[in-house]
Image (cartoon, rainbow, N blue to C red; front, top):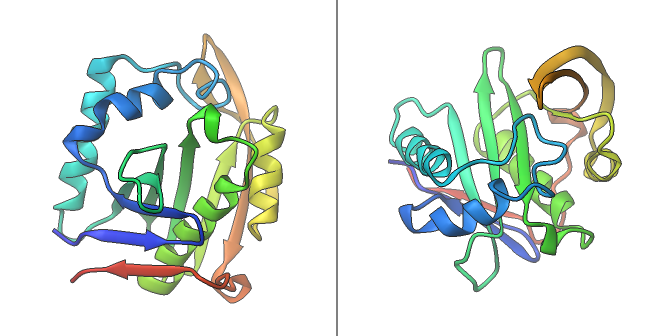
Length: 189
């Protein structure tokens, strides 16, 4: 296993642990937190499956998926979930969700910066991209503030809540990436 620990000015991303179930359920089981995500609120069993998959992916060689707990510095408690999934051609898709109590404080921007540090500085990727709901204006602001560029719309990209939904994609390239001060990425090898 190659444990990951990424630190920004206020947040740390760490490996997901089995003890994270109730905190992750507070995010992924929350209708407000999942309103713009590509799935409906998760059950306890579904959250446990996510945790099990996250732990298993950390042990894979080569590792292609990084599912990480978002925490405040000095507090081990999960306040959100972040994911980077490697793709062919030195690319990856990222996504994250924070508990609604954490919204509006710039933590999403820091989370995107940490995922970019993992992708560009540690994994040597060329391109990182994300997709969001067209109605999620907060996510649009977050991704753009983090340095990403809006690429376009994928029509009827996901089926959620009984209907097809478009996605707006954003990306950032390795030569566009400048890590903010105080960002540290450490992947034990």
